[in-house]
Each structure stands twice: as structure tokens, then as C-alpha cells.
Amino acid sequence: MGRVFFFTQKRLNYSIFYKKNQLLYGILNIVGGSLKTKKVKLKLKPNVVKYLKVIGVLLLIFLVCFIFYRKQISNITDLGYSEIAAKKILFDEDKEYILTVKENKTLNAALETDFYKAKYLKNYAKINFVDHKNLIKNINTLLDKGYSNSDVNIILSHGDDNDVTEFSKRERVRYLEEFYEFSYAKLKYYDRYLAYTDSTGEDEKTTVIHVNLNMDKTEYDDAVSVDKFGYDMLVNKFHALDNGFEVVDLISVPMDYSGGEEYKANRVAITALTQMFEAAKVDGLEMVVNSAYRSYDDQLELIEFYRKWYGDNYVNKYVARAGYSEHQTGLAFDIGSTSSKVFADSKEYQWMQENCYKYGFILRFTKKAEGITGYKSEPWHYRYVGKEIAEYIHTHKITFEEYYAMFLVK
Ligand SMILES: [Zn+2]
Image (tube, rainbow, N blue to C red; front, side, top):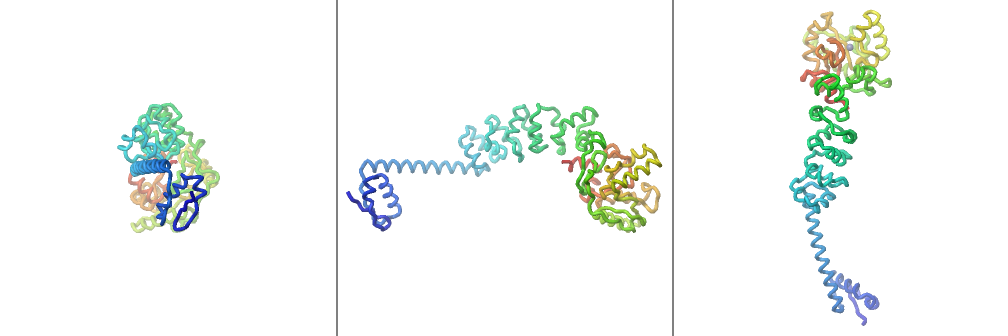
């Protein structure tokens, strides 16, 4: 029974092997054939041939099915779904619906997790995707509590993953739309908004702004601690400078603009101030700096000075406590005019109303804004915030506090 098998021109003797395993020999023969063996001589028993044919057909069927399956998967991934999601969609009973939804990041995320709930399929498709770790888990919890899709969208867009997780622990709340109609309303402050509006009777917008500014807390005592310098930093009765706060880039105000006195301030702010004073000069106006940077100790001294001469009432109304004064940031200037003793009556003051924003300055404490700044009007006190913020504040006629509450509060 010795047989000779020619495999890629190399003569090999498989006879012993062949006796032991006819089937394997057959497969080798086919492989050898496909590799265009020059010469194949093999006689197989008829029943072995039959098996091989069946295997061949099965392999072919499997291959066709696999190609079909891959095609289906790639059709779904082409819609924007991930491979994992596509595999689930293919066997989902709502496959047709999912395919009509087309690309949907929330649905994709849902299908990728173990938290996917088939009953919320249509909800997922209508909820805006946000990049939160617990997105689907939180959506499920909120839907379980009876929130609508639009409620869930509101909730997701006003907090980070942690805020939403915390929020979803509570029972369903009221006034969601009222507070969160404002893009700057914070999910984590929900309780504070509710408490504030209940106790003060303020409308929703004022409530959101005031709470964002920490104004529902006790002034001075419960102030937010500010430890980092920034041109957009907020320092007021509800935002106190930390003991470790360090002022940045302090240089002297040019003597020409300080009436011969030695004042210091931030370098960038001084550059802007110089340009502003020069521009005013071109218009025939002359301004002078009466105060700029004041350290914590300078402020303490100042308070005592005013207390002696004007009393507690005056100090409480006009003078910031040490650690709560903008002058400690190096970004604030008290400005006077050489033409008039009362700055508010001067031409220079009028000029500042129209022009200071162009140089990145704002009038910090206006009469109209006493309620929100917490200070009586100070026509002489200007703060450097940078051109972009100053222009926005000027155009929209708002205070720095409001700007901060809308765009800068974390
Ligand atoms: Zn001042």
C-alpha cells in the first residue's frame, strides 16, 4: 500500500503516516492541490471522499455566512455605531428602529454598556450625549424616577458626571426648567437655589446669579477662598483672598501718573493703564493714580485710619476688610483727575465711561449695582480685567459679578 506523495516538487514518503491517518492525508492532498502541486497521486476510500465533500460544503456555507455577517456589521458601523454596539444591534428585536435612528452617540454608549435597558431604547435615542463615565447608569436612574427626556437633557447639561450622579440620588425635584433655563445654573446648587428663592422671594435668574456668587452664604465668614492670581479673578465680600495668595508681577506705577507717589501694581495692568492715560492725554485730559496695590497689612492700616476719622459705619460701607479688597490683587486703581477734586464731576470721569473698556478696565462699583457688588458707588475705583471681559461688561451693561456668575464660576 505504499504511496508516494509529491508535494511542491519534493518527493516525500507519507506511506506510514497515511496508514495511520487517512483523513489527514486527504486534507494534505487538497492543500497540496491548491498549492498547485505538480503531481498528486492519491486514492481515497469512497466514504472518506464523501466526508471531505461534506466538510467542504460546510466550510463554504460557514464562509458565506461569515461574509454576510461581517457585511451586516459593517453596514451598522458605517452608521456611526461601534463594533460592540453593532453586534448587539444586529440581534436586537428593535433593530429596524435603531437603524432608522442612524448615528446616535447616546444609543451607542447605551448599547456598549451592561446597563442597557431595552425599554429605554427610544429615550436613549432622544437624550443628548455628554461625555460622562456613568452616563447610561444615571440616565436609567433618572428615567426610573419619572423624568422626561427633556428633563434628563437639562440635568445632564448643567453638571459634570459627579454632579449628575449625586443629583440622581434624590427624589424627583420641582422647578427644574425654571432654574435650568439659564445655561450657567449649576446642578450641584439645586438645593441652594431652592432655599434662596424660598427665603428671599427673588426670581429664578437673580437666584441663580446670587447663589453662583455665594451670596446665599454669610458675607466674610463663609466666603469662597481665592488662592490663585488671574486677570479674571473675583474678590469681594463673598470671595476672599487666601492667606497663601501671592500677587503676580508687581512693578511701580510710572511717576508721571502717580502724582510723584510710589504705587505698585501688576505689570500688564500698568501697561494698559499707561496706554489709557496716554489716549486721554491726546483728548486733553489728565488723570492720576491715587492708589493701586495694597498688601494685607496696608489694608489693615487703611481700615484703622478711616475708622479713626469716619467711624465704623463708614468703614463697613466703603472700606473692604483685609483679604477682601481688590487692591490686594494688584489689578485695581483708584483714579483721580487733576482738573476736579470730585472725580465723578470731572470730564475725565466721562471719558472713562466711554473709553476705559477699550483698555481692559471696568468701573467696578456703580450706583446701580450696589445690591450685587455690596459696595456703595465708587466712581474712582477701576479694575483691570482684560479687553475681552471689559468689552462684554461694557456692551451688556452688567457688573463683573454678573459676568463671573455667568461665565467664570466653576
Ligand atoms: Zn479702590
